[in-house]
Length: 108
Image (cartoon, rainbow, N blue to C red; front, side, top):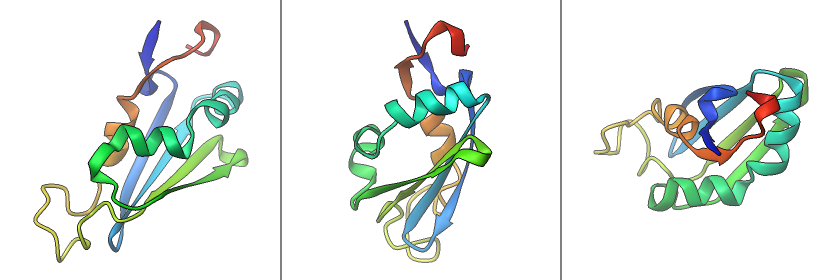
């Protein structure tokens, strides 16, 4: 059964110039290991659709049970140049947590 990521993770996001930085922090090492296999750069880019005009780069932080994604060229120039509603990318983490995936029952 598909479940939202917020059932097994938390997030934090913000801007870095024209890019958005999205951290996904899992509730357990088991959830983190599952996330490393399932939540790929390609999947995140597809999920955000046309919002991300550049590449998505993923960094693994095993000591924090976290994945950090850089969504390149996702803020139309950055906080002082864009007309987007979320000029600093603060809501991008919450949006990622709404991604629905087949999360194994033992991780819930």
